Image (cartoon, rainbow, N blue to C red):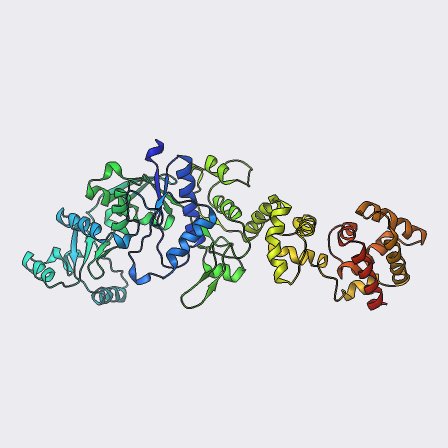
Amino acid sequence: MSSESVRVRFAPSPTGPLHIGGVRTALFNYLFAKQHGGSFILRIEDTDSSRFVPGAEAYINASLQWLGLKVDEGVGEGGPYGPYKQSERKEIYKKYADLLVDRGWAYYAFDTPEDLEAMRTAAEKDKKSFAYDLHSRNDLNNSLSMSEDELKDRLDKNIPYVIRFKMPENIDVEATDLIRGKVVFNTNTLDDKVLYKSADELPTYHLANIVDDHLMKISHVIRGEEWLPSLPLHVMMYRAFEWSDTMPAFAHLPLILKPNGKGKLSKRDGDKEGFPVFPLEYISPSGEVSAGYRESGYFPEAVNNLLALLGWNSGTEQELFTMDELIKTFSLERVNKSGARFDPDKARWFNQQYLQQKSDSELAALFMPFLKQKGVEAERAYVERVVAMVKDRVHFVSELWEHSFFFFTAPQEYDAKVVQKRWKDEIPAFMEELAGAFESFPTWDAASLKEKASELMQSRGLSFGAVANALRLALTGGAFGPDLFMIVELLGQKEVVSRLSKAKSLLG
């Protein structure tokens, strides 16, 4: 495959927030394009005017930018095959819809929505299903069942119509899916899909995507499994237009499944189990707020890594991939046919791995705004040392606070259970003595502090464990935190003595 020939598109509809399944589709298209030195194109398919949501297009662009999926051509970037928004290409679609009618591959249909609903209802009463297809089309309100004069009269009077594809009878449509291999459909099982609507002068997805993919020289269509049933129609439309020689290769990605593996992942699943299904936070026109991966504290590289392994594997044990490694390793041949179960715990694990890879300086910079929200002012160098001590305990930057708050603020209360168990007998008196000793220690590093404190404990016949647990209580307010004497070193001489004195005063 020549690099110049590889052109892929991500073509979302601005009907709401971008689902994580759509993000994975964008990612797989991007990886494939970059691997082959090709172009990644963003096209906005806004032909369904009834479902258009203001702000959705901006949301899509912001999501791709956050994830680092740079668009080569598209709505914002421009390019030689624009416009890249389907609502701006109306005249193009009408021309091609008329061409199909002229060639006998499509026809005008004047059935109203009420007519169609009545036929569906009647069929259901007879325990049948209604389909607008080769079996019913000649008995319905369309140009196939009326005279030329009648058709002309209706068109002259601007009576609303749709243009439907005329699916031929009993043809086996064969196609090769790059993931699933050879697939075969018989046209007798297919209905006559609507291609164009005069009411809004807009095409449906089926017409628009075929015309646009052809005119934009798309080489590969990588899309979700939900579009596989439409593949025979699209193949037949390429034949009808006489574009079979330039028809793109198709690949249909498996579904992303619920955590239990049963059914497609939805927003409700995320709401129920407490994880996002959208890349960015989304506020609906009605004010409903949906969580986003960005706002939940995920790193974009963690989300990309997670999604890459949902339905694809490298054939190795490697789990962590940089974007460059993904581009080098990705292949459609290793995409699974079956659905991929979404695992919220694995998502958290990926974020933890990328958090660990960041420098203490980077994490401190990310943590500083959280400290500011808590009313804490601290030196950057101090925050870096704190972060270094606790980062292996967290999955998100936001969790650093609960594992480090005692480095920034003295305990206001003490864990009652720990007090009862550890603050007893001769320990309170020894804490007072230890505070005095700390004031006189000549060196202030964890190793020296531990050595000197241990010597003092031994001289008083006290076990290290009993003293250490009580000391930790005095410094942190409970039985938690990293290495005890690293805490002592970092808090500093003055603060340690102050906290010991405070604990002795409050606890007795």
